[in-house]
Image 1 (cartoon, helix red, strand yellow):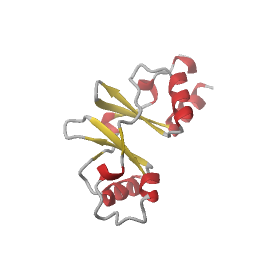
Image 2 (cartoon, helix red, strand yellow):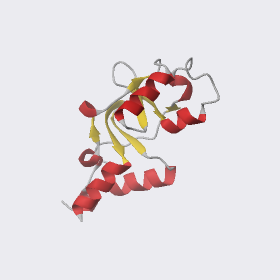
Image 3 (cartoon, one colour):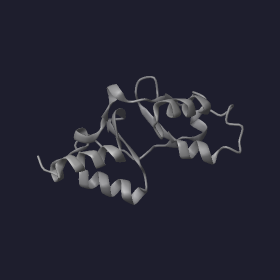
Image 4 (cartoon, helix red, strand yellow):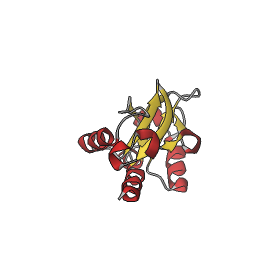
Length: 130
């Protein structure tokens, strides 16, 4: 399999390994989860796994002037994030991430999250293919 044959399913963090958060959780909980896990963003899901947004460290940093202890994730998250399917090509993924200036791209089946693509996973896959 060449680099150009890679699909989202080949480079995504699978659902079983994803760290997510609920929209009604407090922002401070999201911040703590990210810091403890060494990650920069979290998919926001409903109890049934439906993707409803994404929240990043940048979102939290930009809101520091508010009392974030009282804010819920729903108050800061990006709603209806850009997504791809498991069959989306690496070329389309790279163009989407570059054009939209995003570092995380949820992979969905229907409206349920099945994975997450992050830029370092792409770089690793590309390096292994060289």
